[in-house]
Image (tube, rainbow, N blue to C red; front, side, top):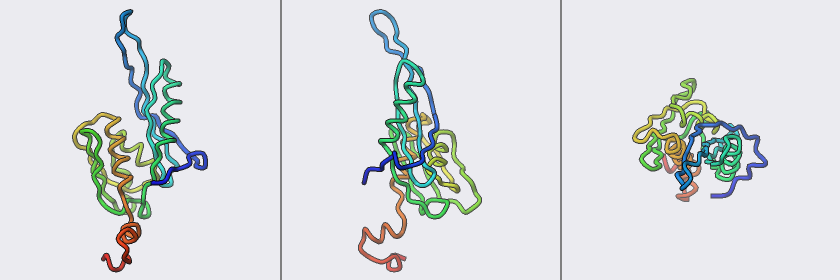
Length: 165
């Protein structure tokens, strides 16, 4: 998997979740914030990142930096994905299914942010297991990064696309 240079892409970012977290120390609790951010160019590149800091803007900035470092490429077939795939992370499972043109993005919450920023226009999804935003985002990205076009599979197998069908 080659590294994607985020500086050459026109990226959009979307804040998915902000959580207040606490660490109990001798003097009491220290409150901090964690932020989950998804970035994408709407053209097959997407990434997610987590940031933690004492202030929300700083947590978001850290999350965006990490998301730009963790970009993946999504193989697309027109406005959808080439085949069905299941993305898993922790106990979060997301089933990603191709949809016909005009269907739109049928996805809930965190998965929708990833799919829209990846540039997929028509897809159906179903989330199982954990509904934690972090697990849902990472499971969606894991699924999208496993998607392969027929041409990519044929090249890996060393045969033509016609021989596969």
